[in-house]
Length: 284
Length: 290
Image (cartoon, rainbow over all chains, first blue to last red; front, side):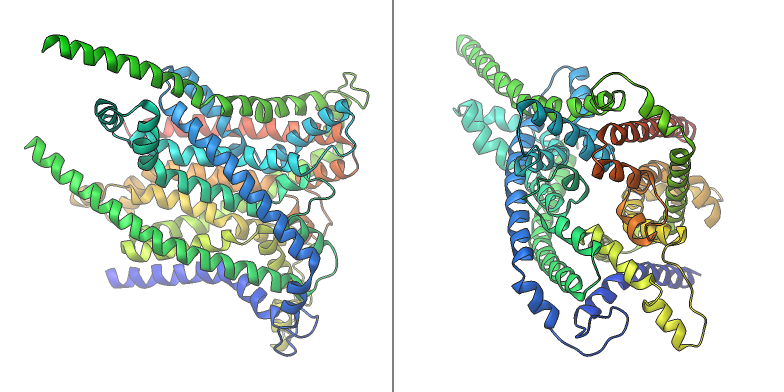
């Protein structure tokens, strides 16, 4: 009886995986096609990879994407961590919940509304200031910081709540100034949360299309925007080659971060276990 | 001794006073940012929605929405998003359940695999389905080889629903899975000890406890589905519009006031929906966990 249900669940999970990965497999398969067709495989070739890697438009878009992702991640991580720190220590409950509900708006709203709302304001303010380029790199940067912030805050906030309050107090008792205690005791304690938030902000910025689409300037093209304009034109395996490269890079990054992450997690699990043991001994 | 203690306490109070100043201002940049780039832009949506090109008050944009054309588009968006959400729930719920039953090591691998496609840009994911479903695509050339008549999928509402399900399925699986892993297994044991069979355990313990996960899954699939414009363009063949397409068209035509009006209506309807779901889930929680 138990074995039977095991077979069913395995089969079901395999079917889901096929559904999730079949399109990727098709894409990767046809990226090695020598011809232009996306239905008939002619001959194995790396021709389209050569085309992508030599394409200055693609490389430029990649550079822009990275610039935008790095700057928006830096700003949102800094501001978000500080915000989580402040929110975590807020005394007035209504203020806390008000700040949190506003923070969550970009997460709850559909991207298209976040994009349109920012665009309307940028266009309005730009017109008032008489700017010729109302939308630019800067408007995109503001948009990316805005939609990344809630993710940073939500990653850091639980770490601040988990933090043992006696730690900074001990640091103060032992002669640290508040600033020293913040950087030497509190920051290391919440660092895993900051990292998670930063990674999330970075990947979301890399991946975003909808909000970028509405707040983009005419001269600043990112990779998702380029892919969008490419898919508007005729289909070529160039896009598949590009997609495959992105996919492989992400895969490698994931494996690396997973390997280091699992190490980190193992350590944390150990600590948690030890703490539990101590607690039990204390209560006994 | 006592004096020393007092001194220390005073010192501490002084320090914590300094600290609370730091704490007070730590959130200030974020609060200013949120007002400038979250609240004010939303006010601009309302402002544009109720004004004409010269920024005079008008109800024309909202009235245009209630014309036959936009109502049809809106109804179609709601319908397709609901169908996609329902299918995601149908497929995703058992998947989340089975994954939560696996060994911890296997769970971790499976969750990574489920999330892996999400790391691929959704434009490319959608595009891959266009390649598969098109009339000269993989499915049809395969059917042709088998000597079966080809099927026409691309450009239909079904193709759009397939795209939505594919793109957003992990958003359904993840929250349900995370609720299920938190389920106390002693509850299941207690239920079976008290005479529940497998189905009874599912109906009386597992499903009621997973309701919060299901609700966040539903919102996480429904919201991007109803507001999409790329999926309908690529898989719907541009033949029929969803509300997202309508907003994009008005944006491209530089008709920002109409785009704002459509966004405003979409926002109001989603808010109403969330409110209803919230009420519903509150009542459920009260009912199941007295």
